Image (cartoon, rainbow, N blue to C red):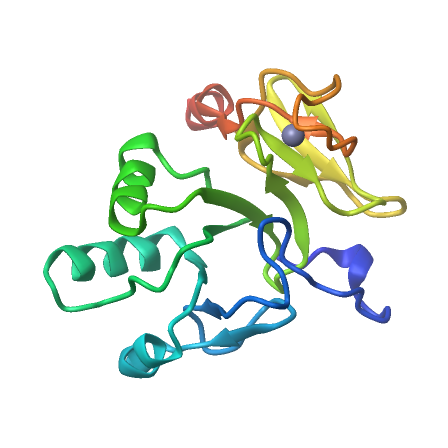
Length: 197
Ligand SMILES: [Zn+2]
């Protein structure tokens, strides 16, 4: 699902958030890169990825888990990654469950940050530096809770149902970032149960 409000406009820079930066070698497991200064490596180009020696790796959770298993099996060597892993979570998907997140961390041994994106890699929210939730990353983007479900809305656009919930949706963050923060973002099991009945 693309974020409708961003269509037809000049696209803003799509820089990855801290601790990424253009001075780093940054790779994305994908056919095309969704962010500035990031080089894309499709699945069949693993050897090129190793030669590139990325310091930052961006990918959906399933691709990162596959890479983690390949590392544990000795089939993939990515010891160059020394800054961060960014996990892409598209609208409709859920945050990475703790056991899977732990597996990704054990494979790469660097901080893991979730990025909430639409299908065109527009960054909607990104995990707090202090891992205390997700900060909204689009200035026009607002959120509200309907029941327990987290909805995202942009002016003149219908709200997007996320299938997620958050336990706290206001207040200043200890990390110093003043962007709105969503805390304890998880799958909204309650609404799913209600819709199934
Ligand atoms: Zn924060």
